Image (cartoon, rainbow, N blue to C red):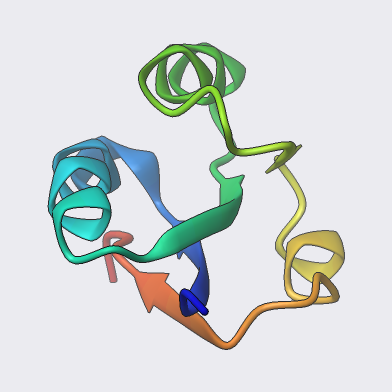
Length: 72
């Protein structure tokens, strides 16, 4: 059974998608405020079914972990 993760922040998080797949992680949700980045990420990770622009909705998803790859 794969670990289910969410990725928050797709500016840098786009690069993490490839690594996550290589590690066998299941990406179940992605979140970014920029809809264009979300669309681009969805094309790179079509098996991800959930996309969010709102963190509060994103964090409610059934995930084992969240990769915070946002600017802070």
